[in-house]
Amino acid sequence: FCQYIYQSENVSQYTHPDYLWAAAVLILYWFLSLWLRAARGQVDDDPLIFVVKDFTSIVVGFCFLCIVVIAI
Image: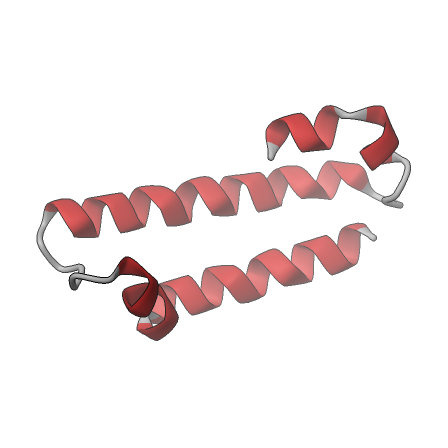
């Protein structure tokens, strides 16, 4: 995602491409949170079902979409 932000043809598609760095931080937070929960044994057998039902994942996904819309 960070490489996507730096590519010049992608930057021209956004009015505020610097806001995408906040989305990158959200992705990092979500990934590390999921990794920590998996290490603790809190993730079911299927991580996709866990992500769809997890409140934190839903909030991070919503915030990610809001940041992308604001950047456009």
